[in-house]
Length: 129
Image (cartoon, helix red, strand yellow):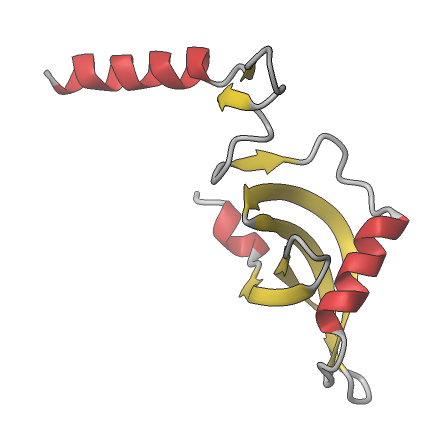
């Protein structure tokens, strides 16, 4: 029974990912990058001027650590937009070693930006031997 349920879930995930638009208002109905609440991976992880401005706005007033965006990972549409950005973080002290963080800024519908969270990114945790 577990195998059947797993197969059904896998099929729903595979075939339900496509974005179907309502003809009248171009609103996503199922799946796709604009699905409210769903995370969408970035089509291009390149750091643009917009991403740099987003990070600068999010970090405004926060001191002690310098965050340099390295890759735009994706977004989540909510009442506004959550973003995920891989950053190189360096504590502002002499000879500080950089670390890797995932910055989660939230941009509301008025363009205000705040930091939802900052998560450690551990490359060692990606590999299990």
